[in-house]
Structure formats: C-alpha cells, structure tokens
Image (cartoon, rainbow, N blue to C red; front, side):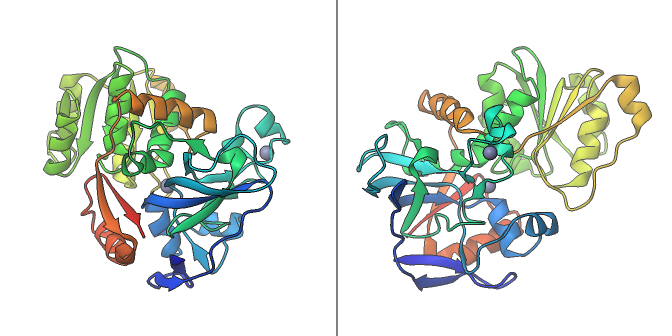
Length: 340
Ligand SMILES: [Zn+2]
Ligand SMILES: [Zn+2]
C-alpha cells in the first residue's frame, strides 16, 4: 500500500510502497478515506518535542496521522462489536490498558501505558491503517470522512477542554487563535450557548470566526487590545489554542476575576503567571489532553446534529510535505485532510 513514512526527523516524509498491515485477533483493518493533518504531526516530524520524545518510544520508520476515518475492510477473529463495512475513526489514543488507576477513573487519556496512533504505532497517512476494535469510534452516516476526520483530534481536544474549563450558557468565552482547533472551539462554545470572543492576529481568521457565530472578533495585534477586551467584558473562560506564549499572556490578563484559563496550544517556552494576580483574581488554570472515547462520541453527535463543522481542504497524500510547509507558514484556514 501507499504510505507517507517518517524515517528521520527534519527530513521530508517519503511516499513509499509498504506492506499492508495484518489484523491481529482484536484488531480491524480500515481503508482510510481521509486523515486530518495535525500540528502534532508537524512537530513530531520536525523532532520538535523533546518532552514527548523522551517520554514515549516513537516508532521508526513511522507512518504518522491520528485523525483517520474510513471503512472496516477486515477484522480479527475475536472482534464482535464492529462489522466489516462500518465507518469508523482512529484517534490519538490507539489503545489504553483499562486496568490502571487512570483508566478505572475514566481518564483513559492519561493512561501511562497507552499506545499513541502515528507516534508509537503506525497511523493514518496511508491507504490502510489497523486499529484495536475496542478503541475505534463509529462515525455517524451524516458526516463525510473529510468532515469527521479532524474531529478525532482537533475537535476532541477542544471539546474536552471546553468541558473541563466549565463552559456554560451565558458565559463569555474567548478563543485565542482561530486555526484548526480554534475555529472548532468557536463552534463548540457556541453550541454550549456561550458568547464567543474570537482573538487572532489574522483578519481573515477573525472573519471566519464571525461567520461561525463569534459575537466579537478582536485583533490581538491591535494597540488597544486590552481596552477592547475590557469594553466587551473580561471572559469567564479563555481557551488558548494558539501555540504562542504571547497569546497566553494576553488571555491571562484579559480574564475576569474567577476566570478560567484553558491550556490547549503548546508554545515551546514555559508559561509564567504572577501568583499575586492569580490569587487576587482567583484564576483557575485548566489543562486538557486530547479526550476519551466518551468525549468523542458526544462530539460526533454534536457534529451530526450540524452544530460543529470543520472547515477542511482535501489534498492527496502525495502532497503531505507541501501541506507541512504551508502549516509552518500559517497558511492553512481550518484543517487539511489527506487521502491516498
Ligand atoms: Zn492531533
Ligand atoms: Zn490504563
């Protein structure tokens, strides 16, 4: 089968013919119809995440891609719950043990024994991907593969973060960064009946946020940024999807007292906030790591109901390196979904 393979960090992926994966007893083989391209893929390919690289055993050579959706074409002898022909998706969490304290508390996303799709095992930048039947999630018929794929990481991550940050009806929710994650965060916060303030440095992205239902759109580069946020009213929740430390600083400063900072985007630098300000305002800082299968099912239902639509662009898998280059330059509006 055709696949995009990472051999060495900082080198382009190679489009190659590789052996089609073979299903184990508890696995399914999926013909990939679309796989979203995530910033994590780019970071990994660039070898840019020392903390991740030291914590997990990255497979090499590696087929990346952890937002894969397609039809089941084969299944192992022990698989009962999923049928051949069903459309399913594979997310970042390829497998979790189900036995540890975290798994038992419903926090499978924090399982220390988890396998990670497209990191510790091969992922979806290929014609076929194999997956654990227990960990694939069915895709509602009303969603195309291209619409559904980005929900498996980008959508899931912001959905769980919105829940953990306690987004509620009537609150002001600021979304910092209207990229692949942010434009979904705008819609998810809207679906939770929040008043959304979109923040970005790109007028094009702010315009997209307005179209998606953001009541306010503020340019983070404006000299009177703080004054504009104050006029709207400090947000109850600020979800930072941008990987810029400056965005975190702006988000922290603009929160109202008793506000919550949602940590989603991953700047290379450490975040640093003054304790005196946190105490004086009783600021909460809440981080979130992708999401569980239960979160994903809830999100797919929201999307099937038309509340969340990822803006996508379909590209052939053979263009993956060009797509990475466009992502480095911040040229992608929404999410690219590749297929072979
Ligand atoms: Zn991702
Ligand atoms: Zn576990």
